[in-house]
Length: 421
Image 1: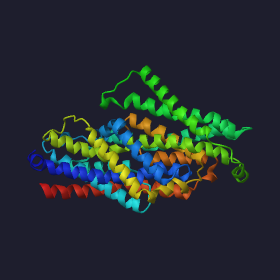
Image 2 (image 1 turned 45 degrees about the vertical axis):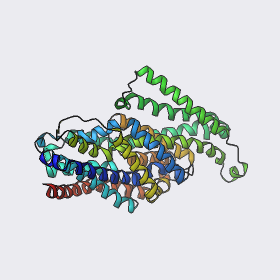
Image 3 (image 1 turned 120 degrees about the horizontal axis):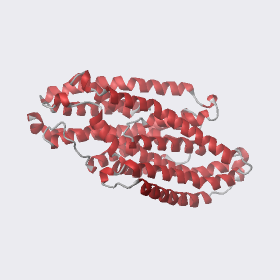
Image 4 (image 1 turned 180 degrees about the horizontal axis):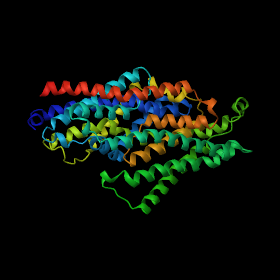
């Protein structure tokens, strides 16, 4: 208690710096992968991707970021054994932030699309084992999180493949693909708006004191979907047949219809990512802030201040703008060849999966889901359409992330403990 009262302000300042560093890493690595499908398919430019991320990452973090943040902050370890020494939890959360941030910077520099969720969860578990003991880790909760890492890319892949098959059936394999693309396009855009609005309204706005009934949530989601579809219809109707391009590629004009549709999925994915992954950077920061504000009350339930969620959103956007180009190529170009229609399916599937996971409080990996979505789209054309060597390298980078994060966190924890104790 005495250490927290003496160094409380310093701990908050350090936590803010480490939190910004961590969310910068999330922007440089995870958001680059999220936006990679849109950029890689040629639907939007890198500059547009940064603008979309700036608006919708902020929106997702502020409106729907609270649920997952609570899981990262309180659900992974049991702070009971250190109730008399709350400074240990402060050291641990600071160590977890710095360890994960360092690993993300190294990975981004090398162009590895690693999981930021792996990084922070591994770091928190590493500190808990080193600083408290094996029994402090809630292994059942870790099991649920690990299961979500397996289920989420599979779910993303299945949804993406199903969407791709539906687009083939309704549009590509018909007598007039261009006309059918313009007919069905607004329906797909409606689906984007409806699903993201519905799931956000169900569970995402309680910390803003907005709690609608289930029927009312459906009504609002339908209205939002209709508005989004209306905007999509106007944009899609502007697209004209390009006979010259169609000579080189039969579906060139059809793919142009999907280009404005990709704008909506990119916005949806950025919102979903902000809702889910802002927790990775600000969860430990919120824990430190809550401990200092309460004078060391480990068990006290602290609210999530809006400024912390906005701080996380800011760090993520800066990371994408300054360093995201290094890893954006992997998802967009190296796994499988993406066109706007394929990119639309992969991104929409990923957005749906991430938003569902964030509302269930599961800190899933956006990288896993994005990769799953792209693989699902590729597999819809056959196993030969995906580069298995690239996928193998990505999986290997995922595997080493957990132990690296854990070991780094343990080292930093003992360093901080030595400095302040």
